[in-house]
Image (tube, rainbow, N blue to C red; front, top):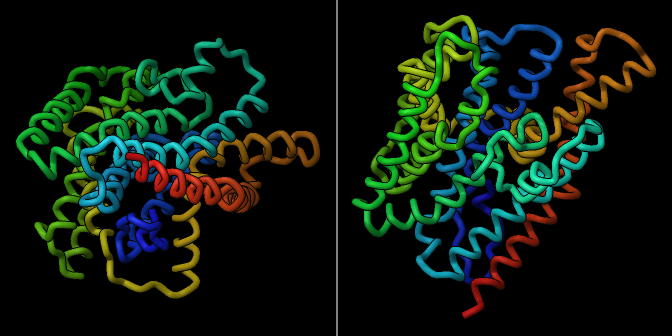
Length: 364
């Protein structure tokens, strides 16, 4: 999320890019790509494993960061008017849909599966997140459907938070209670997560994460929370230890429901808060690496399953070696292709979205 881009006329932008949030977003995308490789070549994905936690809570951290960064960008800039709200959705459309469409098209090309017209329509319009969360195309696309639902609620949540807090408390409180209903009553802890996937991917099962991010953004942007460097270090250590060492084992179902889920979400929030404006300056090479994976994190997230599929097929036809030995090749290809899609697809459409957004604001 760029807070330091050159503003278009009439647009307010943040004065500084928060690199530490980019680092966290990129790190989560990178680790999720590694997590999927691991579960594709082995079974190291239990509730007690490091990558088992990453597979679930890496995405949760995405949702928290989404609410946090959207608040930081749009608070005081989004107003209750048709041009302003329409401009917000225009920018989200150009940010999300071009790469989403390409990733789904590539998945269809590789998968060659048969999908109904309804499935294709819901997937390519993004409506699946609203009406049928399991009708998506691609391994990780379900979470983008969730994001689209959250974006549809964001103007209402932001405007009520800034103009009528009582209404924000009522709306967000109702959504969080609905989320907690899923957490405590919709899952069967005696069954496996895979068998309850349709419940897990429901946006109402994750909405509290997005609201938590907005709330964190409100607290830090308005000076309600001011952290010293030592306090940030403490939050990060406590959050990381809690997220990865909180006692749980067996199937992943045991970390997505009940009080364990509540605790792990809180630890995830602490990690995000600890990364906010983190003042540590890493070595230049480390900075450039994390800056890069932060910028291309959306491409890493959507493209890595496609890279893996292509690599497996090429390996079968040419090399025929155990796929686990191609881990470094997989990582390199994923990073190269993510940078390619970011530069030739994401960046041009982001710029186009800004221009169209500015033009829509000029329409009376």
